[in-house]
Length: 138
Length: 138
DNA sequence: TTATTAGTTTATAATCAGTCTAAAGTAGAA
DNA sequence: TTCTACTTTAGACTGATTATAAACTAATAA
Image 1 (tube, rainbow over the protein chains, first blue to last red):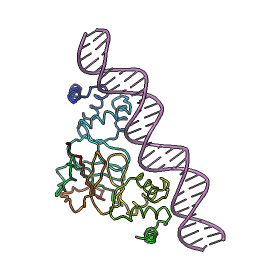
Image 2 (image 1 turned 90 degrees about the horizontal axis):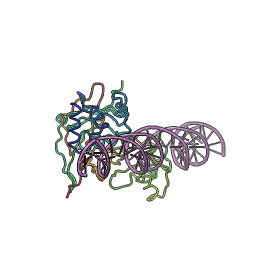
Image 3 (image 1 turned 90 degrees about the vertical axis):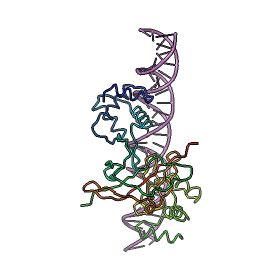
Image 4 (image 1 turned 120 degrees about the horizontal axis):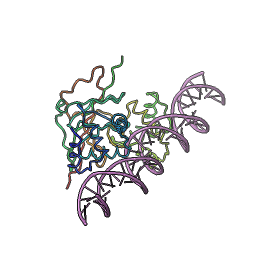
């Protein structure tokens, strides 16, 4: 993808294509593979790999805007800080509770049967399966 | 359950039956139904319903100790603060992302098929299914 | 172009959950 | 009763996230 594509992408979804947002698009979407990251990871990555100091507040704002637009997903894990994922397809995760490592599982791999009906008046938005794993003790 | 039962329960698992721990046991386990709560919920509950001001640090300590002993479970949700659950059976949850409401789903209700093998050297500790729901828009 | 304005970015302060610390208190064993 | 190790506590501290308010900039109209 070229810069102009990101500019269009942003503009089409009602976000002004600012320098910072375009750079963040490059960092997130100009990759072969999708990946997981924290807000801090991204802020550091922008400075080191993209030579672009972006204020933390802006990184938060941008990620939340991108999340709203469906460009990234936020991953639900119990622990400390929250993870984002550039893999926006429906999928699940292995999660190493000791190392905080996250590994994607294609949603087609796991079959969920007998999903119960949601409480009255509510409807299902998404189902997250987290398989908590740990290193085998030696 | 009577106080003496809690004292035995604590002592049997190597925790000294202090006044605070016994009171917290009463609050958590002398109920008809299991329930979900945050650390703050519990601290307030102790003061209001049990007339017992317990320091926040102690509430944290106690809950972590109880979690380690398997008296409570901690629930993995993305958002703000973490939830505890007095339902320690294996089970899943409906989670209302707008209201933060949590509803238990018996683990036998949902059938998981084709669980993929964990990454090499790791083994599965637990599987959490969170069904995110929202109020139907009127 | 230029001027206007509405949306953005930024540094910094503020907040909030959770942890740490060191002193005071207490249960259990001798 | 005394001693010791475990607990509790208030308050300091940390780290993630949000709020604020001033400076900046993209989009639009003139």
